[in-house]
Amino acid sequence: TKYGICARSYPELDIRNLTQSQAEEIYKQEYWVKSKCDWLPDSLSVAVFDYSIHSSTIQAIKDLQKALGVKADGVIGNQTLGACNSQPIKQVLERYFDNRLDFMIRCKGWTKYCKGWINRWCAVKKVCESLI
Image (cartoon, rainbow, N blue to C red; front, side):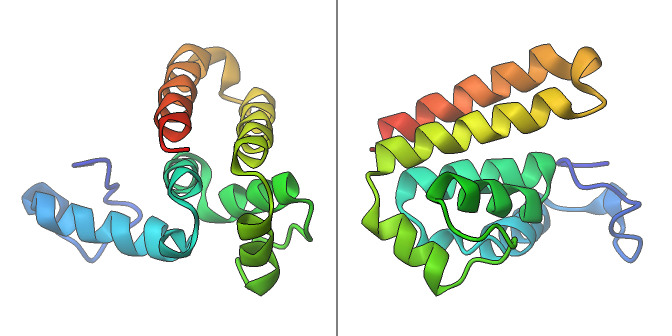
């Protein structure tokens, strides 16, 4: 891996010679764009982006939809965006981070990686709360 980009996921890329700019573009396209972060309120865009990187875009979106109380289908559409813009962001963010924590605890790697995962969860939560 380089810059967190795994050669197994991108067999067509020369990971050893991957530039930071190329890695940034992969992150942008694979996580930011696919999660429609440009369309979300700032604090939620950061939360969804990080969760997408850590646990998959579909999981991040489904937990966002659960926090919003809309159908959790893993696709951000008009219903999800409407709910994002019509609900108090602070409460949505709290529910979203609770959902993420619940997901992490249920992961098979929890006992091995819990300290790092919790540190990441706390750091991202703090950043997101500062954006409200």
